[in-house]
Structure formats: C-alpha cells, structure tokens
Amino acid sequence: MADVATVAIPVRDGGPLLDEVLAAVRAQQVDADVELLVCDSGSRDGSVGIAKRHGAEVFQIAPREFSHGATRNELVRRASGSHVAFLTQDATPADARWLQRLLDGFGQGEDVALTYGPYRPRPDAPAPVRRELEEWFAVQAPNGRTATVRLENAERPVARSLIPQARMFFSDANGCVARAAWEEVPFRDVPYAEDRLLAADLLAKGYAKVYVPEAAVLHSHRYPPLQHLRRCFDEWRALNEIAGYVEPLSLVAVVDAVRADGIASLPHHAARAIGAALGSRAGRLPAGWTRRLSLEGRA
Image 1: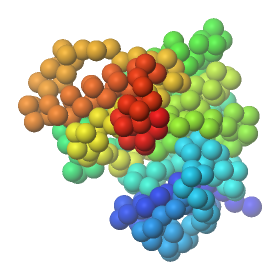
Image 2 (image 1 turned 180 degrees about the vertical axis):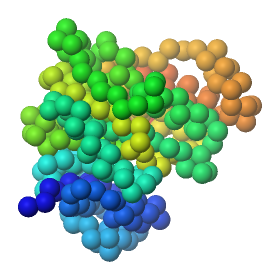
Image 3 (image 1 turned 90 degrees about the vertical axis):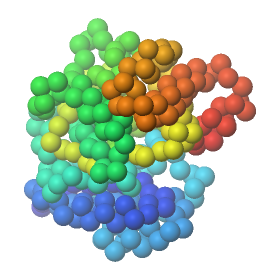
C-alpha cells in the first residue's frame, strides 16, 4: 500500500486565492498518495464547492466552533496520512515539489516532529513586507540550508519563556506535523499562535523541528494601517500569552526601518510598532480596549 500524506486546510470564505492554492496542491509531485482535507467554518462564497471540485474531502463546522488549535486537531484526527501538511487558504505552494520537500525533512532524524518552510511575498506585497519576510526567514537558516533545532535537556523546562522566539518558530501556514508526535503532543486550544506553542511543547518533549528553505509558499498580506495595527496586536498579544514576551518600545527602531524602506513605509512601521507594543501589554488594558484593538474581536 502506498504511503499517504495529507494536506489540511481550514477555510472560511477563501475567495479567489483558494482555487489557486488547491490547484497547486493537486499539482504536487510527491512519492505518496495525497489526501486533500478541508474544514469549512461557514463560508458563504462558494468555497465548499471549490474545494470539492479539486477532490477535497470537506467537513463543515459552525463558525462559533472554530478555533485555531482545536480545528487543526480535528483535521489531524480525520486525516489518513502519517504526516499532515498544513496550509492556510491564502498560502500557495511555490512549486510542484513543496510537499515532497517538507516530507523529506523528516529524514533528518527519527525524532523530527515538525518541518516547515518560508513565506515568499506575493507580487503586490509592499516593500517593508518583502524585507520583513526575507529577514525573518533568513534567521531560520543563516547559511540558507536545511536547519534542525533540538533542545538540550537543560533548555526544555524554559522552552516557552527564555529561548529566542526565532529558534522556537513554526508555522501551520506552511508546515507539516508527524502524526505520531501529534498523538503525544496535540495543538493546544488557544486563540492564536497555536503553531508556535505546538513547536515549544514538542521541543520541550525532546522532539526536533526542521526548517526547509526550499519548501516555500507564496503568502503575504497587504493590510491598510489600522488593520495592520490590529493584526499585530493579536500576534504580539499571543506571544505574550504563550511566552511572556514584551515588545520593547523603540522609536529608533521605527526610524531605522523607515530609512531602510522609504518614507512611504512610515504608516506600516508605525502601525506595527504600536500594535506590537499594545498587544504584548494587552493584559494591562481594559477588556473593552482589547476587544476593539483585536482584529479577531477578542476581549
């Protein structure tokens, strides 16, 4: 019997990009049978029909039942594959060997629980977004090669709080999970940053993760300033909740970023700095403020 690899995608109103993402999955050249599994949480734009047209197995939940961690756990439970590769509805595999490269990463050791790849900016991505993506993923593998992270025994008790965030990074917008490891350490049912928390939990258990630079997806956002601020608020709030991280307040950092990207980038960098600073201090804010600042409306 041929090996099975599952590609799992949570969807809600995926829009035109969903068709592109699913077509790219179906075009994968991989040494396994590919199962395409979609969880739809209340789409009204025809996303269910698009998914079925690409041969996906689709199950549906009510919007109120969706959560980033619990829904992905349900996707793994329903998956047939020994490895489950996650995408989001707007993350398109960059080439036909994306999935095979993620699967090959598990060959770095029997203890590998996670593999993941980079985001490449879409053609319409603003200059600061391009630079931020390039710099962030360059940190994952400074020499540009496949990189494996394992924690020493002394590091495991402090994996979530004291180890640099770049070292603990994992993304389920472009990442693969070994089912056997997930059965021991599943996603936590948290509002945000479920993928980073999964990586921290697995590393603390003695598993390894592998970054595969060649396993790229096209994935970037073009938010207006206020929406960008609210997105950053949610992201940095989650980092504070799972790891106690607090973003430094630095006008110098904003000035340096604007110098690098041009004066037109000021709204982007100012929104990022304010959202990150407020988000990582969300516990000190009134609930009404956090609800208004959160892009997901979470108090």
